[in-house]
Image 1 (tube, rainbow, N blue to C red):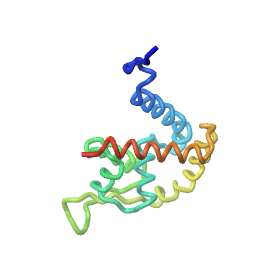
Image 2: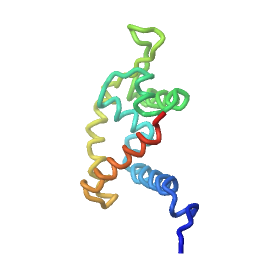
Image 3: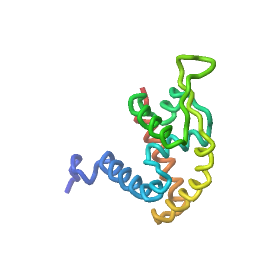
Length: 144
């Protein structure tokens, strides 16, 4: 008997969608005490890696359009984790910088990756293989 190419359970898009929602749900109780949503956490990860960043750089790194990124930045600024100012070298550009409180939050966030590994009940090697595969999918999906 042939497999149905349109069967829901055979669709990569379906598996990715369900997996993404599930993984974000695993992060939620870890991020809530820090006052972060998952998208805000991604912004903070980018800034902990490279601070400061322009709004354009953040948008590119996170693959978010400016209209989606702007409310995230406003909320992070209102919580005191970042500041948004005009770039001194280019008045048209937005410079996003961590505050002392935002930098200090990184210490608490260091507990998140091992907690996620534990909650997913997968080995680090399995997660690395998954990450490599997903990175290939992302690259293929974004080819022009």
